[in-house]
Image (cartoon, rainbow over all chains, first blue to last red):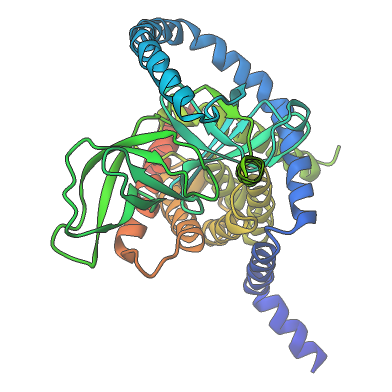
Length: 277
Length: 167
């Protein structure tokens, strides 16, 4: 019997090893979000980012000249836009003062460099060179000068992993800028889609999509992209819209983390509300 | 040092180098979202040289490290790369040069990369609302073709003895 068993093991050894590893992989998936696993992930990320950071720096330097040109152009455009917005701002302040509103639109930004990118079809994650010691916390929104990049997922002392908008696990409440119609923004592995819009709603092409204050993850209005087209004009109960994002994740090297976590921001609003009473 | 151990150590060093290339430089050659998986090429090479079981162990370990540093679902790349090692290991034989030094290597990489990316896509992005054929085409075949192309470039760049290509 023992000999038969040994013969069986010897004959099917690769298959048995495969079964063991498959079971082990599924076990790991089930504990993927545990606190101890997150600590292990943070440790691995921190060690790897130190090594990758050196190479990332070299890469960053080689892109400086093209980045500089693009930034100069962007700077000029922003200067013109800023001039116009300044005029609106003065007008807006006067109106707010008249209504006795509090200013809630200033955010503290933490500048960071992308030290590594993980490109998989269903998820694109970044590692940035700012972490806990720079007050970066999980849940903070990450933006570039063009718009939304993603959310901080986990942090170590000097680095953080960012889940970008191209991640099947990240779903955000967004809205159309002009009509204010809300929907759910999600990445399906190939396209960025805004779901759940009424079939009767008229959607102009190139309508801007921004994050909604209704979102429990990002409660401020950040630009996401433009509407490209309706994906299912003749099927389904709701319209799904294809969104063309403003931020090109392939090229991006510099980002900003907004120093706010949505739940705390909501608390602040609630306190303001109580104070107002 | 024992030659066997030095081979394993060499494979680990190459893996670290490829992982850095994968997360820093490979994103710049992404076509839409498809990128070549350099680690899969190493797994194929290792499995052909060291056998199916060692290939699976190597695949699992490299996949686990990839999961840890990339922020993806822990165990997903480990599973995909274990299967990659299993598939590539089927071609392992005493005459390793039949596969390593001929164009067959590219086809093994293609097949293995397809198994790897399809498994990963199915585990991390399985949704009943998604079209399974589309999912496998977009997230399985496209990255596999890209990986195969990179392995072909690597293969033709390597110095060959005259006539080996036709073996």
